Length: 165
Image (cartoon, rainbow, N blue to C red; front, top):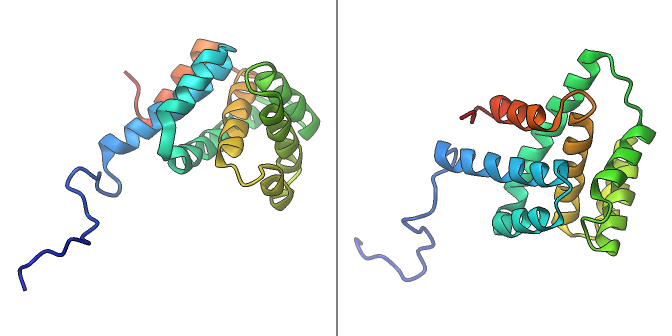
């Protein structure tokens, strides 16, 4: 009793679940990836992915929230956005920003995802969580720009995420 084993896997620097500082950091990482796609900046996409590192699943979760928010926003404005439109927009968003095989996987996975074929989309990601993350970030950049200018989109995402400066 009172003796700590060497197998204690709790680290003093690990953030607590639902840590607001960690949540904000993840939201910033997600927005940075969307911003890289908005600005069509290949280097910024690579830097954003490097910055995300092991937080890919958490950032993907944030991107899902942003994608849902932006989809509702587009619907509210009355802009018609069909699966074919989103496929073309995602393809345009990732064009020349990713390695060709990753670009192909992202576009193919999005085609399936956009029509509700989530299992097929997961197969097309080839088990690579980065494919799904790129897919969602590219979609957010594309659909967001259907109703917002680039800076307004990024500002709106910060406000929606509760991290407005």
